[in-house]
Image (cartoon, rainbow, N blue to C red; front, side):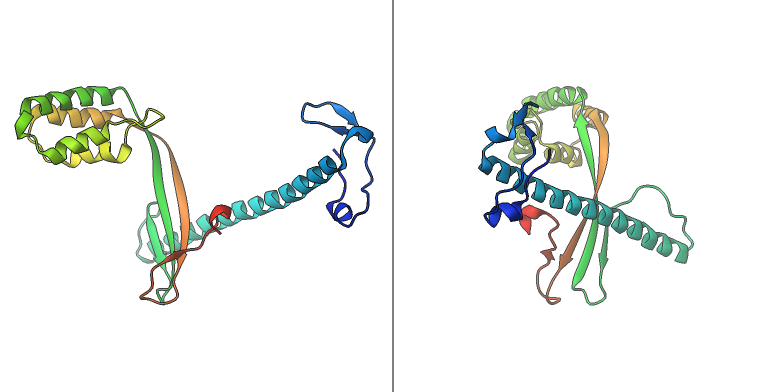
Length: 215
């Protein structure tokens, strides 16, 4: 849909309108029935959207450049020490020589828990019931927190993954930990890059924000 110029509208010059405008329901509305304020708002939105999409394209290109450079740098280090470079990126931190700039590459797995998790919960409940008074309150609290669901019905991932780290010599507990391991499916992996800067070596790091909400 053709739209008027914001600059012309702001200056007080009536923008030239086409014969019809398409509305939100796909109907063609005669220009004489469309309010001037709606035309102005339309052009305002289209102008900023165009700039936002251009910025998004720039950031997407920058992200590709960053990961290309990271892979090239890591490959160079592997070549220096005669080690074959391949596989997935891992968590890495790069620092400037003066210690004032830092780049972090972080890998996060997006996982889900299958029905085996309910088997694990049943086995853990049996353990806690039998141990009764002998159960450490910290262990009981950790288990309760791990299986407490949020508003979306999801369990606390970090707390669930912390359970296998507990050294408990009980056959049912060990089967429960195996059930937790079997329940995990990694659906996708995301790689993030974050930039940090500080004014001096004894100052805390400050994030270089690439998020409009935090700029």
